[in-house]
Image (cartoon, rainbow, N blue to C red; front, side, top):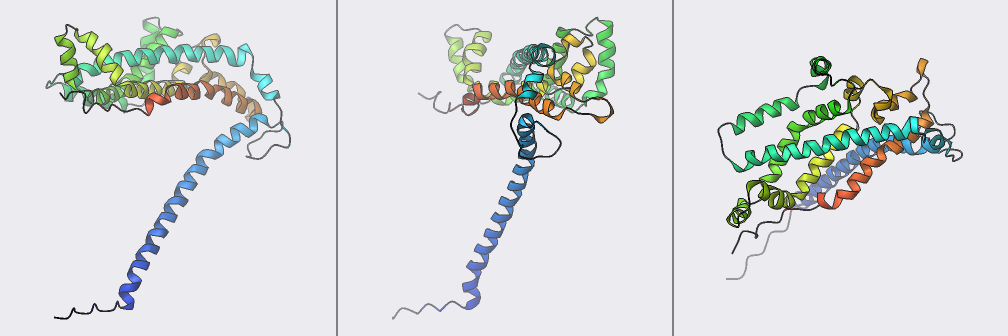
Length: 294
């Protein structure tokens, strides 16, 4: 039998692929426009900070400066304005971050490796703790710190910083720890390693990206915290940079915009350096699928 001839496409069926392609193109264009708006909204404050730090007549407008100057940096790069508060911030946030990471690893290990009826209630409890606003608990915390003589002390503020970040850090650490096969630890136990040795020599090195995420997240959240050190620290020499930035806002609405922008550039440098130093570990993966075969 001779092959049947295929019917010629009607104008409606011919226009359907074009209509679908144009509709997809419009959606893609709308998505790109939305992303562009979001990117601009994030880039404008950053542009203001960088340009105002070099503008001799800085104000609230985002504009290209008529001339470039470093007098704003010369004004803030002093021990009283910048160096001492930055050192205080590094001590507070660095100590609290180290304490948070260590405690989160020790708490997440039994939650990840041992099954118990209390695991889920405990995780839900600490999840509820992360939803509590910090302003709601500062009054009882302040009264407690006064009673135990921890008010206006660096160690007391470090302890509260670590306690406030610990619930979410435990959640993150447990999720990353679940990705490390337990068979690797069992092999280490067979060779005579203890539980602590398997945690420090097997689990934590293999979950390096997870430890890096918890470290960066905890440090950044503490670095930008204004309310906690403002409430718990009273001596000016102990105030971190997140509180001393308030000194650039004078009375009657007067603000030193140029110095504020220059201080913001210096203030954000440690966080950027921390991210750059461990960015390689953040991009890593576990890739342990074949580690337990054979």
